[in-house]
Image 1 (cartoon, rainbow, N blue to C red):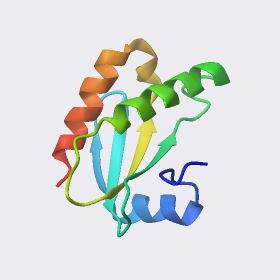
Image 2: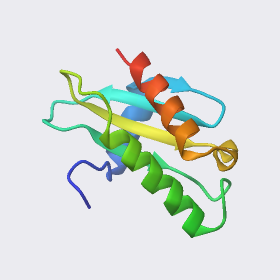
Image 3: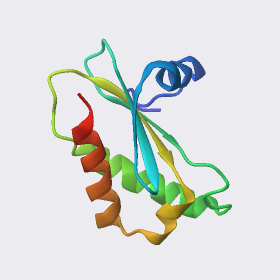
Image 4: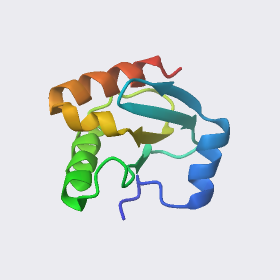
Length: 107
């Protein structure tokens, strides 16, 4: 697991409790400032989105690729992206535009 991935339940719980939240029609992003030298990412995509693992993994890969290109801020954050079922109707470009819009709202 890469060092910039969120994997511990306590990290997810902390972001849910105290992180900033921004949502659009097909995904949400929660962000919490961290004291590390890197941004970390967690993606939540449930079986309600798709029962087919290949589709869920494709969406995760697309999101990771988009997050790699986030504009650099002076502070580092833990990002948690929550995927909704409506994402299945979107192409990569639409997903990228929406994630970048939501990320720009983070203070």
